[in-house]
Figure 1: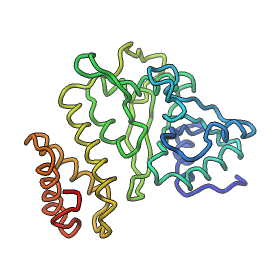
Figure 2 (figure 1 turned 135 degrees about the vertical axis):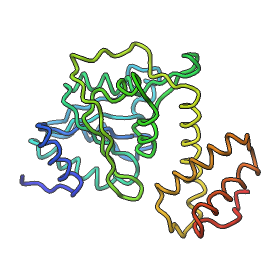
Figure 3 (figure 1 turned 90 degrees about the vertical axis):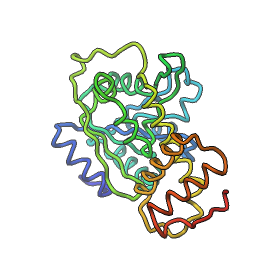
Figure 4 (figure 1 turned 60 degrees about the vertical axis):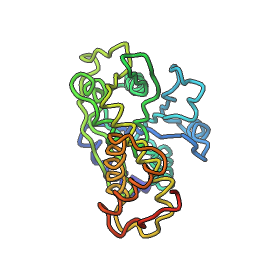
Length: 269
């Protein structure tokens, strides 16, 4: 190769070679992305295959601000160089979810688009499943079991991303052949416990984003911190805590579980 790759992309190239793939698929979280992604992709010569995953869904009007699937060919230097530049600029913003798949691009696109749609309350409610946000991916991908697990992971050999502590993460898929997979017509179904788990994780992420910024010590890694925040919010859910009682409980939990990481009081109380 006569073009430079970041270390993470070099490792990904080796993985795709081992899987006998001459391309890599990347889901880019374009939510509030300060970068002309679609314009830049269309300007490449030749442009890579790409699609907006929220197109054709109830949230199609927000497609440009949602997940974008891009298939980068390792044989096209312009595409690889673009991906390297993008990863260097944005990989620590929870925007780059890489995956290995043998599925044709159109079939993979349809499957990953299906995975953006979730239902709960026995189908009475529905919404976007934000698995493409790498801060949420591990929790979301692990919440399913049985048929729903297969329905989510069918098209993928493995998923890869960098966590907030700049450490590589991987989750294995199911790697089902596309001709052997029959996708349900209804979206992925979330039960009560699954919904509560995802709700607590979302609350933990929101807490870290708003409260964690005031804590300049950061003795503990962010991944461990958010994991403890998740457990704290789950327990607060069980106790039906709200308002100041909820805030005080979370702070006390962090002080006990991650000593010296948080002050015993918070200006948010």
